[in-house]
Length: 310
Image 1 (cartoon, one colour):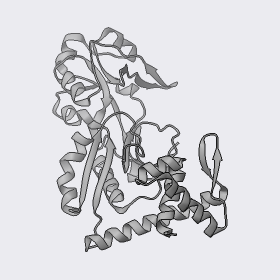
Image 2 (cartoon, one colour):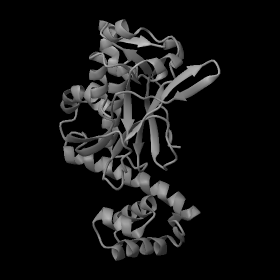
Image 3 (cartoon, one colour):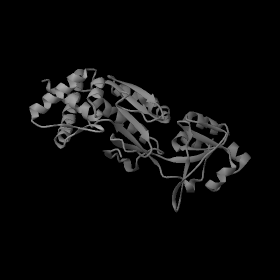
Protein backbone atom coordinates (compact mmCIF):
# COMPACT_ATOMS: atom_id res chain seq x y z
CA UNK A 1 0.00 0.00 0.00
CA UNK A 2 1.24 3.49 -0.91
CA UNK A 3 0.75 5.14 2.48
CA UNK A 4 0.94 8.71 1.18
CA UNK A 5 -1.53 8.01 -1.64
CA UNK A 6 -3.85 6.31 0.84
CA UNK A 7 -3.80 9.41 3.07
CA UNK A 8 -4.48 11.67 0.07
CA UNK A 9 -7.36 9.50 -1.12
CA UNK A 10 -8.87 9.26 2.36
CA UNK A 11 -8.69 13.05 2.88
CA UNK A 12 -10.36 13.78 -0.47
CA UNK A 13 -13.10 11.22 0.21
CA UNK A 14 -13.87 12.85 3.57
CA UNK A 15 -13.86 16.36 2.09
CA UNK A 16 -16.04 15.46 -0.91
CA UNK A 17 -18.20 12.84 0.92
CA UNK A 18 -17.95 10.65 -2.16
CA UNK A 19 -15.59 8.00 -3.60
CA UNK A 20 -16.53 8.94 -7.17
CA UNK A 21 -16.06 12.68 -6.62
CA UNK A 22 -12.70 12.10 -4.92
CA UNK A 23 -11.63 9.92 -7.84
CA UNK A 24 -12.55 12.62 -10.38
CA UNK A 25 -10.65 15.28 -8.45
CA UNK A 26 -7.59 13.04 -8.15
CA UNK A 27 -7.71 11.88 -11.77
CA UNK A 28 -7.94 8.17 -10.98
CA UNK A 29 -10.60 5.47 -11.17
CA UNK A 30 -13.09 5.00 -8.34
CA UNK A 31 -11.92 1.40 -7.68
CA UNK A 32 -8.41 2.69 -6.97
CA UNK A 33 -9.73 5.09 -4.33
CA UNK A 34 -11.95 2.44 -2.72
CA UNK A 35 -9.08 -0.04 -2.69
CA UNK A 36 -6.64 2.38 -1.04
CA UNK A 37 -9.12 3.42 1.65
CA UNK A 38 -10.07 -0.20 2.37
CA UNK A 39 -6.38 -1.12 2.66
CA UNK A 40 -5.89 1.82 5.03
CA UNK A 41 -8.75 0.60 7.24
CA UNK A 42 -7.28 -2.92 7.30
CA UNK A 43 -3.86 -1.58 8.22
CA UNK A 44 -5.28 0.52 11.05
CA UNK A 45 -7.75 -2.11 12.19
CA UNK A 46 -10.53 0.47 12.37
CA UNK A 47 -13.52 1.57 10.28
CA UNK A 48 -12.91 5.12 9.05
CA UNK A 49 -16.04 5.83 6.99
CA UNK A 50 -19.80 5.29 7.28
CA UNK A 51 -22.32 5.45 4.44
CA UNK A 52 -25.31 7.73 5.14
CA UNK A 53 -28.21 9.00 3.07
CA UNK A 54 -26.15 12.16 2.44
CA UNK A 55 -23.02 10.32 1.34
CA UNK A 56 -19.93 9.20 3.18
CA UNK A 57 -19.17 10.48 6.68
CA UNK A 58 -16.15 9.71 8.87
CA UNK A 59 -16.60 7.59 11.97
CA UNK A 60 -15.28 9.06 15.25
CA UNK A 61 -12.00 7.23 14.62
CA UNK A 62 -12.05 8.45 11.02
CA UNK A 63 -12.57 12.07 12.08
CA UNK A 64 -9.57 11.90 14.41
CA UNK A 65 -7.46 10.23 11.73
CA UNK A 66 -8.55 12.83 9.15
CA UNK A 67 -7.12 15.65 11.29
CA UNK A 68 -3.81 13.81 11.60
CA UNK A 69 -3.74 12.99 7.88
CA UNK A 70 -4.33 16.63 6.92
CA UNK A 71 -1.50 17.74 9.19
CA UNK A 72 0.93 15.13 7.83
CA UNK A 73 0.11 15.93 4.19
CA UNK A 74 0.44 19.64 4.85
CA UNK A 75 3.87 19.17 6.37
CA UNK A 76 4.88 17.00 3.42
CA UNK A 77 3.71 19.66 0.94
CA UNK A 78 5.75 22.32 2.70
CA UNK A 79 8.84 20.11 2.88
CA UNK A 80 8.63 19.30 -0.84
CA UNK A 81 8.11 22.98 -1.67
CA UNK A 82 11.19 24.00 0.30
CA UNK A 83 13.38 21.37 -1.35
CA UNK A 84 12.03 22.02 -4.86
CA UNK A 85 12.70 25.75 -4.59
CA UNK A 86 16.27 25.24 -3.45
CA UNK A 87 16.07 28.22 -1.12
CA UNK A 88 13.25 27.29 1.22
CA UNK A 89 10.81 29.35 -0.84
CA UNK A 90 7.30 28.15 -1.75
CA UNK A 91 6.46 27.47 -5.39
CA UNK A 92 3.54 26.52 -7.63
CA UNK A 93 0.22 27.98 -8.81
CA UNK A 94 -2.29 29.50 -6.39
CA UNK A 95 -5.86 29.84 -7.66
CA UNK A 96 -7.95 32.41 -5.79
CA UNK A 97 -11.60 33.52 -6.04
CA UNK A 98 -11.85 37.16 -4.98
CA UNK A 99 -14.37 40.03 -5.32
CA UNK A 100 -13.49 42.36 -8.21
CA UNK A 101 -13.32 45.47 -6.03
CA UNK A 102 -10.50 43.98 -3.97
CA UNK A 103 -8.44 42.82 -6.95
CA UNK A 104 -8.52 46.13 -8.80
CA UNK A 105 -8.24 48.40 -5.77
CA UNK A 106 -5.67 46.85 -3.52
CA UNK A 107 -4.31 43.45 -4.59
CA UNK A 108 -3.25 43.66 -8.26
CA UNK A 109 -1.44 47.02 -7.81
CA UNK A 110 0.79 45.36 -5.19
CA UNK A 111 1.46 42.03 -6.95
CA UNK A 112 4.87 43.13 -8.23
CA UNK A 113 5.99 43.37 -4.62
CA UNK A 114 4.67 39.84 -3.97
CA UNK A 115 6.42 38.36 -7.01
CA UNK A 116 9.73 39.91 -5.97
CA UNK A 117 9.44 38.09 -2.65
CA UNK A 118 8.09 34.82 -4.09
CA UNK A 119 9.31 34.50 -7.70
CA UNK A 120 8.41 30.79 -7.90
CA UNK A 121 4.70 31.34 -7.24
CA UNK A 122 2.14 31.98 -10.00
CA UNK A 123 -1.25 33.49 -9.13
CA UNK A 124 -4.57 33.05 -10.96
CA UNK A 125 -7.59 35.14 -9.89
CA UNK A 126 -11.24 34.32 -10.53
CA UNK A 127 -12.78 37.75 -10.01
CA UNK A 128 -16.49 37.37 -9.25
CA UNK A 129 -19.09 38.37 -6.66
CA UNK A 130 -20.61 34.89 -6.73
CA UNK A 131 -19.63 32.26 -4.18
CA UNK A 132 -17.29 29.91 -6.03
CA UNK A 133 -17.19 26.20 -5.17
CA UNK A 134 -13.58 25.68 -4.14
CA UNK A 135 -13.51 21.93 -4.67
CA UNK A 136 -15.50 21.79 -7.92
CA UNK A 137 -13.56 24.69 -9.49
CA UNK A 138 -10.10 23.61 -8.32
CA UNK A 139 -9.52 26.73 -6.20
CA UNK A 140 -7.06 26.96 -3.33
CA UNK A 141 -8.58 29.95 -1.61
CA UNK A 142 -11.62 32.25 -1.71
CA UNK A 143 -11.94 35.77 -0.32
CA UNK A 144 -15.49 36.62 0.70
CA UNK A 145 -17.10 39.76 2.05
CA UNK A 146 -20.04 39.53 4.46
CA UNK A 147 -21.33 37.17 7.10
CA UNK A 148 -20.70 33.51 6.31
CA UNK A 149 -23.31 30.85 5.83
CA UNK A 150 -22.79 27.35 7.15
CA UNK A 151 -20.53 25.69 4.60
CA UNK A 152 -17.99 23.49 6.38
CA UNK A 153 -15.17 25.62 4.97
CA UNK A 154 -12.27 26.72 7.13
CA UNK A 155 -12.42 30.50 7.62
CA UNK A 156 -9.83 33.09 8.63
CA UNK A 157 -10.93 36.68 9.19
CA UNK A 158 -8.55 39.06 7.40
CA UNK A 159 -10.33 42.42 7.57
CA UNK A 160 -13.52 44.46 7.78
CA UNK A 161 -15.28 46.50 5.11
CA UNK A 162 -16.86 49.80 6.11
CA UNK A 163 -20.02 50.71 4.22
CA UNK A 164 -20.76 54.28 3.12
CA UNK A 165 -23.59 56.13 1.38
CA UNK A 166 -22.12 58.63 -1.09
CA UNK A 167 -22.91 61.09 -3.87
CA UNK A 168 -21.10 63.71 -5.90
CA UNK A 169 -21.27 67.42 -4.96
CA UNK A 170 -22.83 68.11 -8.38
CA UNK A 171 -25.69 65.69 -7.74
CA UNK A 172 -26.30 67.07 -4.24
CA UNK A 173 -26.28 70.64 -5.55
CA UNK A 174 -29.14 69.72 -7.91
CA UNK A 175 -31.18 67.47 -5.62
CA UNK A 176 -30.27 68.37 -2.03
CA UNK A 177 -28.96 66.32 0.91
CA UNK A 178 -30.91 63.42 2.45
CA UNK A 179 -31.12 63.81 6.24
CA UNK A 180 -32.54 60.36 7.08
CA UNK A 181 -32.65 57.07 5.15
CA UNK A 182 -36.34 57.71 4.44
CA UNK A 183 -35.35 60.79 2.41
CA UNK A 184 -33.69 58.49 -0.15
CA UNK A 185 -37.16 57.76 -1.54
CA UNK A 186 -37.00 61.22 -3.12
CA UNK A 187 -33.59 60.65 -4.76
CA UNK A 188 -32.06 58.81 -7.68
CA UNK A 189 -30.21 55.74 -6.40
CA UNK A 190 -27.36 53.89 -8.08
CA UNK A 191 -28.01 50.27 -7.14
CA UNK A 192 -25.79 47.25 -6.73
CA UNK A 193 -27.08 44.06 -8.34
CA UNK A 194 -26.18 40.51 -7.38
CA UNK A 195 -27.30 37.56 -9.53
CA UNK A 196 -29.95 39.76 -11.16
CA UNK A 197 -31.46 41.01 -7.88
CA UNK A 198 -31.00 44.48 -6.40
CA UNK A 199 -29.18 44.44 -3.05
CA UNK A 200 -30.96 46.09 -0.13
CA UNK A 201 -29.25 49.04 1.55
CA UNK A 202 -28.48 48.80 5.26
CA UNK A 203 -28.57 51.43 7.99
CA UNK A 204 -28.20 51.50 11.78
CA UNK A 205 -30.20 53.36 14.41
CA UNK A 206 -30.34 53.23 18.20
CA UNK A 207 -32.91 50.45 17.81
CA UNK A 208 -30.61 48.35 15.63
CA UNK A 209 -29.75 47.75 11.99
CA UNK A 210 -32.40 47.59 9.28
CA UNK A 211 -32.50 46.88 5.54
CA UNK A 212 -34.16 49.20 3.02
CA UNK A 213 -35.13 48.24 -0.54
CA UNK A 214 -33.30 50.33 -3.13
CA UNK A 215 -34.46 51.18 -6.64
CA UNK A 216 -33.10 53.47 -9.30
CA UNK A 217 -32.64 54.07 -13.01
CA UNK A 218 -29.12 52.64 -13.08
CA UNK A 219 -27.64 49.57 -11.44
CA UNK A 220 -24.68 47.23 -11.94
CA UNK A 221 -22.92 44.28 -10.37
CA UNK A 222 -19.53 45.88 -11.10
CA UNK A 223 -18.11 48.23 -8.41
CA UNK A 224 -16.24 50.14 -11.15
CA UNK A 225 -19.59 50.98 -12.79
CA UNK A 226 -21.06 52.13 -9.47
CA UNK A 227 -18.00 54.29 -8.86
CA UNK A 228 -18.19 55.86 -12.32
CA UNK A 229 -21.93 56.51 -11.99
CA UNK A 230 -21.48 58.37 -8.71
CA UNK A 231 -18.68 60.51 -10.14
CA UNK A 232 -20.89 61.27 -13.15
CA UNK A 233 -23.63 62.58 -10.84
CA UNK A 234 -26.19 59.89 -11.68
CA UNK A 235 -27.29 59.48 -8.07
CA UNK A 236 -26.57 58.25 -4.56
CA UNK A 237 -24.88 54.89 -4.00
CA UNK A 238 -24.12 52.68 -1.04
CA UNK A 239 -21.08 50.40 -1.03
CA UNK A 240 -17.59 49.78 0.24
CA UNK A 241 -16.19 53.04 1.59
CA UNK A 242 -12.74 52.04 0.42
CA UNK A 243 -13.87 52.22 -3.21
CA UNK A 244 -14.41 55.98 -2.74
CA UNK A 245 -11.55 56.59 -0.27
CA UNK A 246 -9.45 58.77 -2.60
CA UNK A 247 -12.52 60.57 -3.98
CA UNK A 248 -13.68 61.44 -0.45
CA UNK A 249 -10.26 62.89 0.38
CA UNK A 250 -10.21 64.87 -2.87
CA UNK A 251 -13.77 66.18 -2.45
CA UNK A 252 -15.05 64.51 -5.61
CA UNK A 253 -17.55 62.55 -3.47
CA UNK A 254 -19.31 63.33 -0.19
CA UNK A 255 -20.36 60.82 2.46
CA UNK A 256 -24.00 60.98 3.53
CA UNK A 257 -26.09 59.69 6.45
CA UNK A 258 -22.98 58.95 8.52
CA UNK A 259 -25.05 58.76 11.73
CA UNK A 260 -26.90 55.82 10.15
CA UNK A 261 -23.85 53.91 8.82
CA UNK A 262 -24.24 50.12 9.21
CA UNK A 263 -21.75 47.89 10.97
CA UNK A 264 -18.69 46.91 8.89
CA UNK A 265 -18.86 43.63 6.98
CA UNK A 266 -16.24 40.97 7.78
CA UNK A 267 -13.76 39.83 5.12
CA UNK A 268 -12.71 36.17 5.31
CA UNK A 269 -10.25 33.89 3.60
CA UNK A 270 -11.85 30.47 3.05
CA UNK A 271 -10.21 27.08 2.49
CA UNK A 272 -11.77 23.72 1.67
CA UNK A 273 -9.30 21.87 3.90
CA UNK A 274 -7.14 22.55 6.94
CA UNK A 275 -4.23 21.18 4.86
CA UNK A 276 -3.03 24.55 3.59
CA UNK A 277 0.17 24.49 1.48
CA UNK A 278 2.82 27.09 2.13
CA UNK A 279 2.20 28.82 -1.21
CA UNK A 280 -1.44 29.36 -0.19
CA UNK A 281 -0.44 30.62 3.25
CA UNK A 282 1.88 33.27 1.82
CA UNK A 283 -0.69 34.59 -0.69
CA UNK A 284 -3.24 34.76 2.15
CA UNK A 285 -0.78 36.76 4.25
CA UNK A 286 -0.11 39.05 1.28
CA UNK A 287 -3.83 39.67 0.62
CA UNK A 288 -4.33 40.34 4.34
CA UNK A 289 -1.56 42.94 4.26
CA UNK A 290 -3.06 44.58 1.17
CA UNK A 291 -6.51 44.76 2.77
CA UNK A 292 -5.20 46.16 6.04
CA UNK A 293 -3.23 48.94 4.35
CA UNK A 294 -6.60 50.64 3.79
CA UNK A 295 -8.17 52.16 6.89
CA UNK A 296 -11.66 51.35 5.60
CA UNK A 297 -10.88 47.61 5.51
CA UNK A 298 -8.55 47.19 8.47
CA UNK A 299 -9.05 44.71 11.29
CA UNK A 300 -9.32 46.36 14.69
CA UNK A 301 -5.92 46.34 16.42
CA UNK A 302 -4.61 44.19 13.56
CA UNK A 303 -6.10 41.00 15.03
CA UNK A 304 -6.35 38.11 12.59
CA UNK A 305 -8.26 35.31 14.34
CA UNK A 306 -8.71 31.83 12.91
CA UNK A 307 -11.84 29.74 13.07
CA UNK A 308 -14.31 27.56 11.22
CA UNK A 309 -16.80 29.14 8.88
CA UNK A 310 -20.34 29.16 10.15
